[in-house]
Image (tube, rainbow, N blue to C red):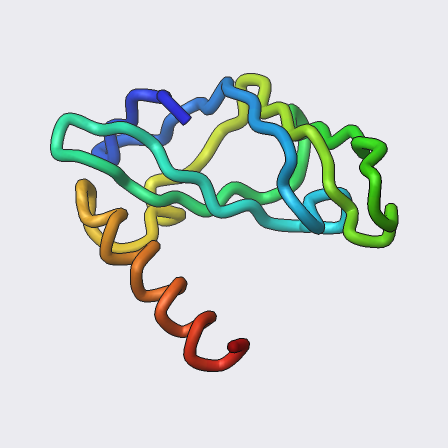
Length: 103
C-alpha cells in the first residue's frame, strides 16, 4: 500500500488491495503504510468505508480470498502497531512467529 501516514493525528485511509486470504471474514485488517520514516503498520477495523468482495479462485472459496477497498476510512492514531517507521519489525515478528508455530 502506498498511503502516506502521519501518526500525530487521526488519518483517513483510501486504498485497495487484492488476493488477501480470509479477508471476507475478517473484522480487522493489518495494513502497511508508507510514512516519512519508513513502513508503519496500522490496524483497521471493519466498518463504514471498508468493503470486501470475494474473488473466485481455482481452490476452495472457504479461504475467503477477497479484494479489499478502504474508502475514506477513519483510523485512530491508537491503531498504530509499534512505532512509526518500525513496521518492518512488526511484520518480521509476525512472520517469525508464524514460521515457528506453523511449519
